[in-house]
Length: 50
Image 1 (tube, rainbow, N blue to C red):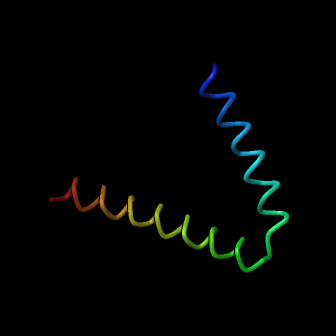
Image 2 (cartoon, rainbow, N blue to C red):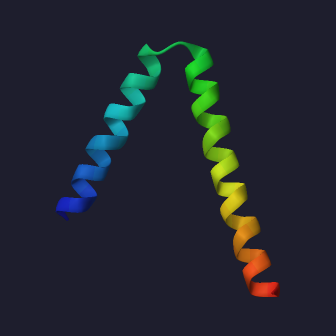
C-alpha cells in the first residue's frame, strides 16, 4: 500500500506542476510519453515476432 500511496501522491503532484507549467511543456511531456509507449510496443512486437 505504501508504494501505491506514494504513486498517487506523485501523480497528484505531477498534475499540479503540469497545471502551473506552460502548455508547451505539457504538450512536450505528453508527446514524449506517447513516443515512449509506442517505442515499447514496437520493441515488444519485434521481440515476439523475431
